[in-house]
Amino acid sequence: MKNRILLLLVVLCCTTANAQNHESQPKRIIDSLTINDLNKKLIEIQTLLKAKKTVTSVELKAHENKIIKKIDSQNSFWKHIIGLVPVFVVLIAGGLTVLQMRLNNISKARIEWTENLRVHVSEYVSVFVTLKDYYVSKRFQDDKNSLEHKELLSTFSKLQSIIRLYLNDQEVKHEELNNLLADSADFLADLFENRIPKEDFSVMMVIFSSNKILKESWEDAKSFKDFWPWSGKKKKDIESK
Image (cartoon, rainbow, N blue to C red; front, side, top):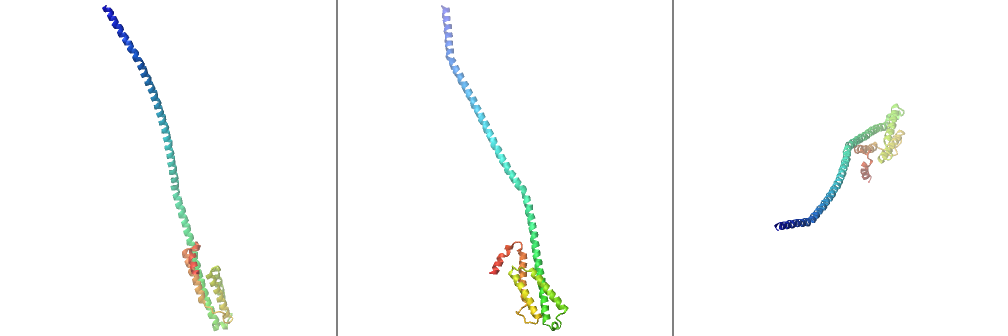
């Protein structure tokens, strides 16, 4: 009897244990399936994050390279500009030097022209006065064909031609002096022929007219009018008015 009771207890314990094992097995299977799914999901998420990180890294790298290239291009442009600055400086300096030399040459030529005209007019006036005094003197009446007279006439004619070569027919003041030269020659011709001059001529008219030309020429030399013709335009317009 006692042995039967022990056997029943053992069977009951085994049955209870098996029942408990059957009840817990599905739960373990479910837990195992859930963990596997989570692991797979986690791996997928990690893969996506890794891919996203890779794409983002590539995009950032490409953008960075683009910015670097742009900066390098700008730097290269400014390097070329800075490199050309000395060339521009040399060209400008050379141009200014050539311009200054040309201005100096023009001014020098104008000053020489003015001085030469002054000398020729002075000599012309001197010869004119000499001939005039000679024609009204008794000595001329005694010897009209003297060598001295011929030399004076030759010098007078030569100086008149030289002065006319300095004059410009397009300039009013020059034309005025040219007409006075012709009047002076006519005046001496009347004296030579012992005629009364047609007009009352004074050599001072030649001096005044030539002085106006000389003054204008000197001002042109200082203002470089021959290089920049418009520099003296306003002044001439005012004088003409």
